[in-house]
Length: 91
Image 1 (cartoon, helix red, strand yellow):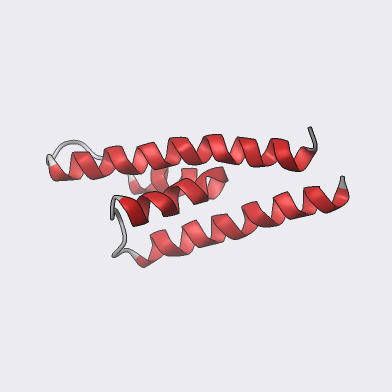
Image 2 (tube, rainbow, N blue to C red):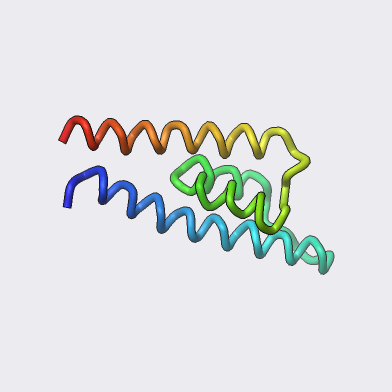
């Protein structure tokens, strides 16, 4: 396996976890229970889970009114795609 494929698989796994975190937080918001901190959601999106974070925003309609969630998910998506492209070209 090439480094780009390994990196994409890692980002995919982190994205799945991020999607679940967003969905759990949405459910907890509806139930008025303890919530997952916004910094945790943003952190997971920035550190490899931007695809899952943005998909969760669109599918479960969570955090869509907060500009900074869009910003950090797109920022994370850009650097994650950039890293995969770099690894694909370099190796």
